Length: 141
Image (cartoon, rainbow, N blue to C red):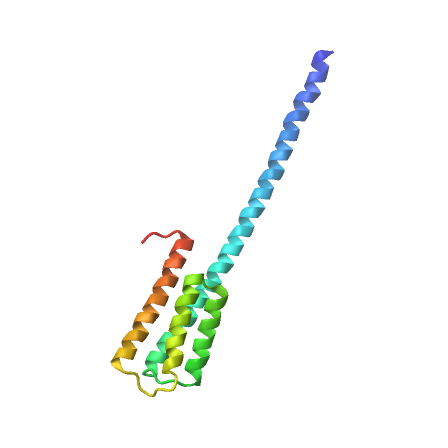
């Protein structure tokens, strides 16, 4: 009689353990997939943020630092992207950069000092952004 009760119990307990393990594993896999998707989307928008800054940089340098409506639009796009998707230090650097650019808005030619300041502020912004991306991706350099 004792072996009769033991046999169904011996089958039932491992089955319950297997089902619980399967449910737990499925939950963890779903969480991992959601994390990957969120991380991937965040990375995409952060790269777009950096691209918008690069487009601004290339365009303003092609136009020999002459201000026009296109430059203003590109700066606005880059600034909004940094405000939406940037880290706090990136946003601060972008505000410094944007402030300098707004000071230069009416000028037809920039002095060598102003061009140098532009390059320093831009380099600081790009380096901060790249370091932040490296940290997110866990890349040591």
